[in-house]
Length: 123
Image (cartoon, rainbow, N blue to C red; front, side, top):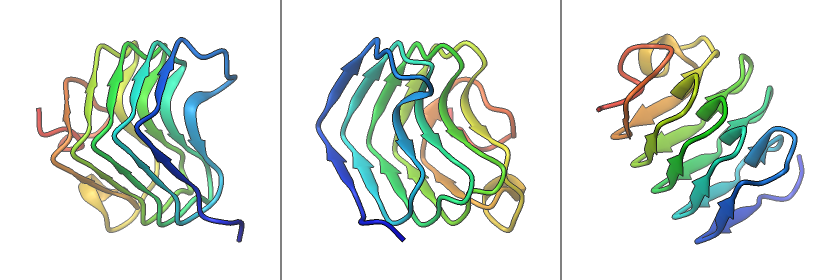
């Protein structure tokens, strides 16, 4: 396992990153209080990433998904984020498990408009 990382109070506007403004490939990282605007995905949780915390971020106008969790991500906590105006979904989770809406992750009190599974967003 790699070292945990922490992102706090960053602004990422129109990044030229291939996937996302902030991406997790590791575990036990924290992303909080960031402003992420016009990126492919605002936050992307890659396969096998686990036990990360994504909280209190604002994600706006993503080219695909605001917050996206891949199929084998698990035990990630996504809470108190505001995600709006994404092209595909504001909240997208492809994992399967005992978490929110049958995912392997836990989504709580996120304010967003579109989702690939009901109840990821509290609207």
